[in-house]
Length: 395
Image 1 (cartoon, rainbow, N blue to C red):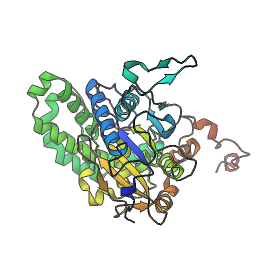
Image 2: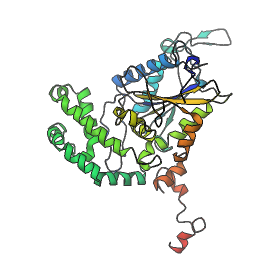
Image 3: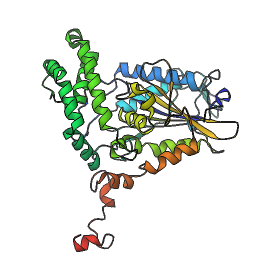
Image 4: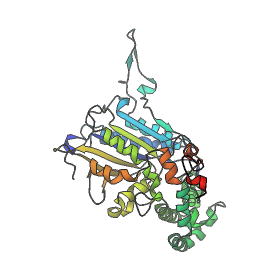
């Protein structure tokens, strides 16, 4: 159903944002995709800050057609925002969230408090506004890094690495891989290592002046192309509950809950933001068939990209969701389609997606065949003859 409430503003928005530029190359094991994060650069912080400014102009500007009804536009009401970010490894994703929030709610002298004695106090740095961010450590829950240490996902990788698709891509990429090898500083030049190849080249081209002056830009473009092909296969699947989609399957529960909660009379949250890396974008666009009508969004989203699930209410009282995407330096949010439609009712979105989600650690453990790591040992009943009778008989 088409959104008919834009002139009246939005009820709220759920945002999925990618972190900004980072200094160090992050190595991802091609067999497991276990990795660590890097650290946000000043360039990356600026990217996120500018994204925050863009979102401010889009959702906090009363003159915008996407203005969120009832949201504080100048002094932040922290009860109106729910923000979380992956804090595992380095702090690039967590720091990106803070930088984005600086652009969303910049310092203002109106951010003050009056003490009992009448003294008016303004926060430091010209009225800097402190927005709470829930930092989710790697060991706390798998929801933001669900592919790591997931045995079924590793099996999915194994099938891809030995399958015909990657064999064909390896043959196609062979001339590029040969040409780029002298620039890799000893990095494995196998197509299976394509993400690490692209990431290394991109970081060097951005931050190493000598490399920038000597490396052919056409090779970087080819690296991005082949990395897109590689990652598109890794983080998608033929069915929406396939393990290849796991990067979004563990994010859906919070996103759907936030949208549903925004419809409640006593709800205060207007913006729910989750800061992540590139992987959930690929799975999200595949699950919703957004790449069918917009094939150019396949692959790796740029730094400081954002997906917005905008919640509106039509004149009949039905809540509808539109999905929009800003890829890095794009100047606008463009509408993507849910299964061929520009918007979908919230009820239909939930019924279409909820059955495929992974909504708890125990659900993740069984969905990944993980019985030991990431807290799964407490859910391992396979050796208990009372809870699992077949273990006592050897079947």
